[in-house]
Length: 294
Image (cartoon, rainbow, N blue to C red; front, side, top):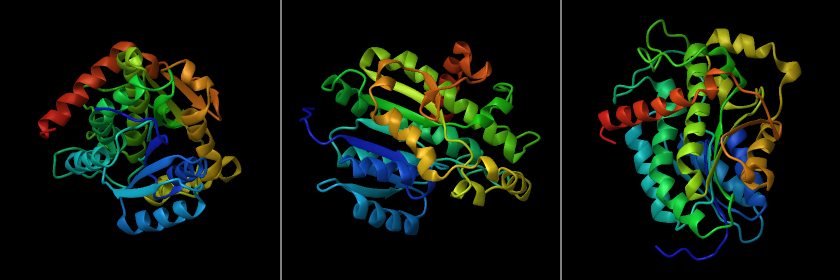
């Protein structure tokens, strides 16, 4: 495939609302072509109109629908992305959130785990050939994969290989923090495996964002807890600043495998830094995707 030098392309998941929409809007305003993905068709249509209205002259914006709780839908969305562009400069794996109950999907996965980790894992794998092809003709350090994790990952002591999807003694908070730990471990393994091919990978924490769909899907207990954090809450636009920084600034392109908060390197848990766990999670995630036929 021959890639012509052209407008930089960002694929942004969770772009129909909240932090993802704010990041997509900021990139479009800088002249990027933005391919956004969102779960709800109506929100996608509204977000597309809003993003186009604020985009820089000549910038392109399009929204695709994708339900990351279903690997089949994730794979379909990946095919649509690949069919629509000959390059991807940045992939922002931002979609995710907390559920109000345990739900097993038709593919046999727990919805929180697949929405927050396994779906983004599959999307990334499907888009990696195009990301690598773009990196081969781009300035070093400019092709990046960024994951939105959470400070909540600190509350997960580690990956339980006997219960990877946390279906035993399920709690919405436990499932969420487990998946957010997985986001960082996946990022570390991405950095290890793909640095030689020019791919930069980082994870970030957005802070407490109350004005998003994250809170609306939580159970009553988590909604009550989140309501106590109004004094430290940030807007989606403030949270998105770190995503945009990691996508565009020079400094993040000089390293890989980092964890950031408020546009600066930040500490992450000991469990998130275990290289053997990161490698095994990759292998286990591939096996889960293969079990579902992907």
